[in-house]
Amino acid sequence: MDVDVELEALRGDEIILLLRGDDSELSDDKIVSDDERDYDPSVQQVLPLQTEPELDSLEEALTNDETLLSVRLETLGAGNANSLRYTWICKDLEAMDVQCAVQFSDPPSEKRSPLQYFESFIDETAIDNLVTQTNLYSTQVLGQSINTSANEMRQFIGIHLLSGIVSSSSYKIYWANETRYNQIADVIPLSRFYKLKRYLLVNDNANILLRDDPRQEKLFKVRPFLDQLKNNFLKTEVEEYNSIDELIILLKPHTSLRQYIKSKPHKWGMKVFSRAGVSGYIYDSEVCVGKGTNTASNPELGMSGNVVIQLIENSPRHANFKLFMDN
Image 1 (tube, rainbow, N blue to C red):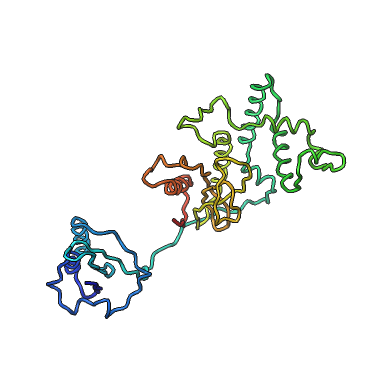
Image 2 (cartoon, rainbow, N blue to C red):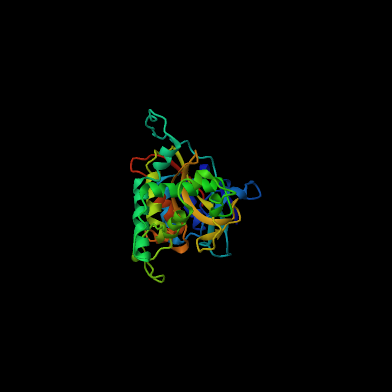
């Protein structure tokens, strides 16, 4: 028997009678057959089968609140009154208060240069860590330090940024006589550049764990730099509307972090979960490393659920924003 029950014509206890398969006490004018009433199945969500204890819980809920949506019942098996499936019919959501008390501080009185903005993210702490670890690693390998400094490390990073704009097939081309690029070649000698490139390090190799150790993470080599960068991004005041989604960073080397996602403009790359504002500014992010991506805190939520929880919990305690996400 396929029936649609109008909530306006039924009390909560009458709905429970239908869920239990007993419609003997209901008058015929309270039941509308499928042939007599059209409905759109595309807007209905089928819920799991209800057992006897679940029906008892629903009975209590209906007793306390008779404003539930209309219920559609279907008998799945002949002679089995408890084998019932019901769906809630969609309706317009009620108006809700969605005001957000986000108040930004006044903008800086003085205009900041691009370099000053850059240094607010790659700050002295990050630079000092690169200098310390690079000198330490060169000492471990060569027996003596290459004695790089914070200023030289900034120049080294600047060369890499500039080479991304003025691209070349090889770093040597910037120093070659025929193709010399003074903005790079005049900063440091080629031999010194390659020495820095050879011994650049972010994390002490002495602390690395064995590959089969479950505590070992794939991002150990760059973890201190990533954490410092994330902490600096989190210092920016949060916009009212935030969204959590995944993005792809183009990555050509063959590594276990490289993934293929056909729906992205760059299909091959490193997947990163990010929380961003409507302006496009990324407040926080977490690199996807596969099965080891943040599942320890709430295993029942899975990787995606834990990532959402972490990207929310990482936000400053005073932050107030609305969050949007997909599945």
